[in-house]
Image (tube, rainbow, N blue to C red; front, side, top):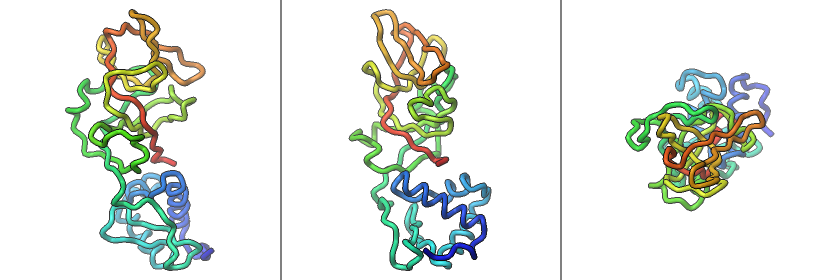
Length: 225
């Protein structure tokens, strides 16, 4: 492996983060994600260090490609770690936050919520759902921690208004004007149980007439990994 001792600590952190990210997601992080996860506030500073890593032979870079960074295997130019091609990634809109704890207000109609935020994911994370029916929300809270969903994760949903018992869903509680992320269980004609995945948190019981399913969870993205 090419010697990293001549790199700055910041550059070594960038390489470690990229290795972890690509191993987890199958494609490289964006410049913004690199900055957020290595403590660099300026994208220009991230760019500067990425260019230094390219010059040192640790990275290759496709200037015109989204997520065009590649790790060079064993420090040998021309031997690039294979990743999911950027052209094959799917762009999914992120419509704000969903609370995985006590329900909290968000806009009732997420389709109308303005957002310039988006994530790029592999097609496999859609689990067969059409891209036009998919949206994403950032998780706030830890009530679904035992389902491996943590504060800060991004959850990919398929838009749907129905749920089966055991589905993990985003639900709008119309009587409270609040939303939450929970497991769905219809226990009777008059009661739905919204079950957290946390050992110390109690379920929420609501009347079916006061609940609107907004989407079913397809997959989880962990940008902070």
